[in-house]
Image 1 (cartoon, rainbow, N blue to C red):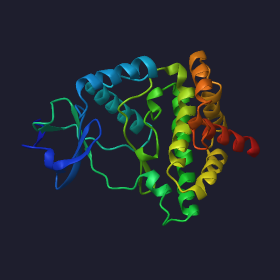
Image 2: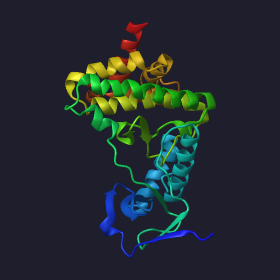
Image 3: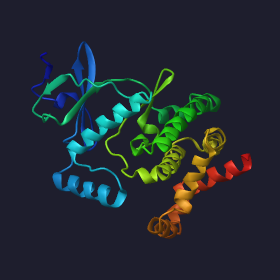
Image 4: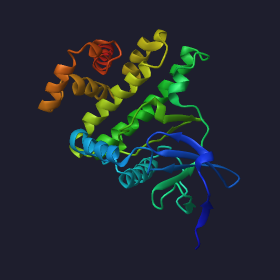
Length: 278
């Protein structure tokens, strides 16, 4: 069967976002689609340097374009199999354009929906309205963490995880941005703890001050697996590996690490509320 072909003489007028990759909003089947081109805006030397840093120092997959594309496909398929909403892909369509290398892109559905971070900082909504959504999010978040730990599957951890990469689509949460993942199956619990702190840390820095303490309390009290919240504290204060533990001990002495919204203090505050609730 012949593949459908989507052809453009120039993608420049369709540019949606340039953030290392190129994202284009392109006309498709009477509506729109997103074209993600992985051969992005960074020069090759920077791409190689970032790739080395990811693989050698961070324990992540490579930043090279074809690897990021392959990883994103794998993760989208894996998350979808477990019932998590991701963008629909149009793998049966071939895109031809000067700025789009063959085998270097994904064509995906275009979705207009608010991001979770925008919802949580929207002061037109009451705090109760925002936290009703957060409480609905927590079990879905924890379900993924439970599966990741049970299956020792690092690809189920949102390496680029924060509320900027979750959309509210009706009653569903739509997850995106899976270009890189952690690689070690032996460190999945550590990755879960880190992701919990990462999400809360990023959100604390963006929501109004009057709901920051409530965010800590709601997360610690209503996230279904308290032992995973404790993992977040352990990762930042008592890391199981010697070198990261020593490095973070030194880092905690820096001024920025003493801010209430530092990851160290986020982990500590979550643990304190958790202890009170027991």
